[in-house]
Length: 544
Image 1 (cartoon, rainbow, N blue to C red):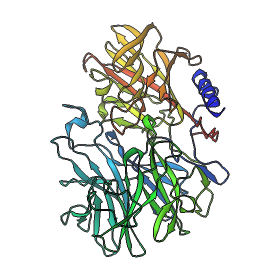
Image 2: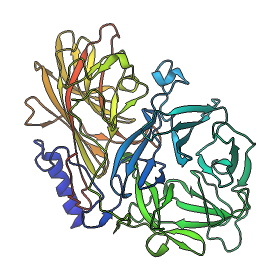
Image 3: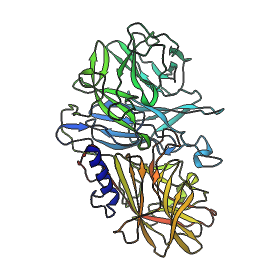
Image 4: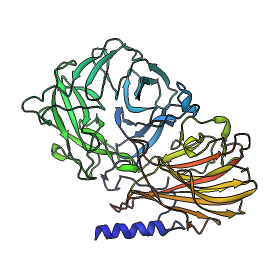
């Protein structure tokens, strides 16, 4: 019956072309409004989480790969309700391919961010992976204020999946590695390497007697380090997407380390296990862990799980049972805070973009504007053979278990060869757009660059809508010529992950497939986001 209800409800969602079943600007929230929350914490792509507490404030950081700005940082007062605080990276200047010159940098950029606060400064570290013969590197960003400005230092060393750690003797370390784990000491300002990496764990090391770890040795990554009651603890995932969370501990930072599985649970989204994240202590002494779970093309979503200390180990789950939680009592932070969520919808009536937006690679800031026509986002076209190479494309996360994006677009500025519209973007992608041939405009559907359907339009204004859902990961598309009645169009995207570990996104774009010189522009009046939890029927929605 539950499955039948979900399919029926999903059908209603697809058919509510006038957006009546889901009010515009409503999004999923984990806060149930009664002192409890329901996982996932943020039902979107916030992968590889790390977390700190500074006084009464919590800060969460996530991997962002090639999207710009990068290293997204969220803020909360209660670990349940989150808003965007800013980004540690404005753009990437180390390779022209971030400007889509000579190639692209999909899946590069920021991986496995680590965040710490020390002596009045915020520190964010991340690695940029090396593939093939190319050299990867590690970056450290430092700021006095979480909102910036941030100063970035690029290291020549490649410290994979880093965990930054400030010891109480003044020394600074990064624990890093994939399969084999290393400790590398940094200089006191954390801006350069001081010593050579020391091997502290290798998958060839025999599993100690009495350990709960799988026999025969195993590899780990995504490490974060803590010092608690005289022990050095390193938490790290193992087993990949269907894996679990490990913890190492030792009285000596160089080891030897013993190990234990602290959570192994895939029951909330089988077969994908809870794995990779960070933990934080509250003022009341309790500990909590934010840990991610792969949910396919929707993304790697964070879950909030209590920690119970057993025999000196931080065991996750209610009563430390090594399992996740679905609905649970909110952390005790001494106050009740209002429901908040990261921003989604945008009226484009400010001089700056909302913090929900990220560009696909570095933008060309001369070819977009919020001030040329106040109240509109103007995207000037640039030459691109397809959407994968359209530099000034603006994105934000899709959300589970279902979310929709609707936009109003004006076409008067379009010229021959321009293509402008709304996409659900990954590899493959589908875009519903207006394409201009000479002076004639067509509404077209592009599926990975191939025109699936089209018709002529004489309108100077059009509305597009796309829906993303984790029900079979299907994304249908709609158009309207009056802003009221929406009609299905083209085919449905079967969302995929052709760019590994990068979730699908809603995207606004304008490019020209003939030349830069011929390009015009498209004006987007607004972008409205709507979301809902189809599975848990969480109807707690708020205006954003």
